[in-house]
Image 1 (cartoon, rainbow, N blue to C red):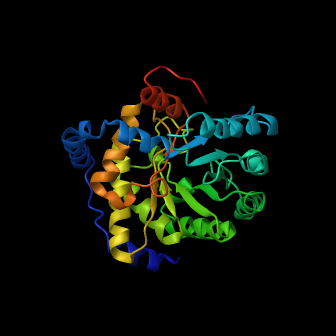
Image 2: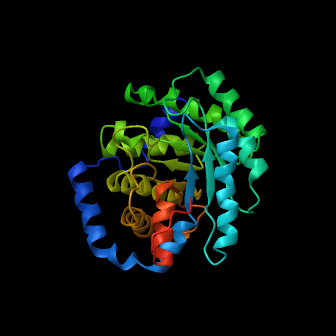
Image 3: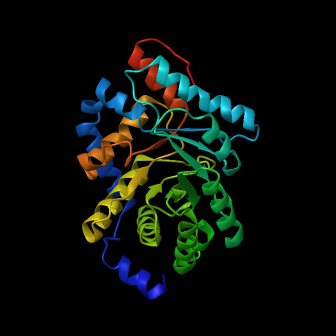
Length: 295
């Protein structure tokens, strides 16, 4: 996208955002609606929206296949509960997940494009993404080049995203904004809009590798951007908070924001994802009524 096209796109959206006002709106929304969503039905739904993730230096083909087999075993052990939405791994393990996974409907996601920094030549990012898709990835999570964004190089940001989108083929692409590195609500809104226009199928808060990850305020602004983009284009974009989702209440908080800002149309495990692994055992423990460490 050329700068003039980006500016034309941005002019269609409300960018006059005040951080304090956003925080007050989020507080009012959650005060009014959070508790009503603390139900077994919502928790069961959220179980099926989890992207079970392993992104460790110690990952290996063997450990990733064992990790994947936990998803297979869960489907057999808890047939009345939904399976997780996705298994998320480094690109070099896409083939291992594909080989081990037996549960239908679970996506294979790979972080790509020089995750988590996005600091690499575009040729390297494109190659990594192409190889991940060839090895079986059905979804790709890339990181918006935050440095370019902060320098105001919106055209460079859009080109980076669109070139990686082309490398995804039929695989869905999530663009991580790394909202904790951005300068407040206005930046988050602009980054969301540019990412969607450049080809994002989902926008995602964070890598989980920075000091500040997902926050309710960032989620609220991103969901507003998704709604406005949908109203402008008719194209539905998914949302994924990630990093810092440490409790069941945290997860229900994001569910509540999506429900109130985007509506029921987004309350499926296609359009709402949760980037967290620790949540799986926490939700399972609440659903079965005792502490359970399955994953």
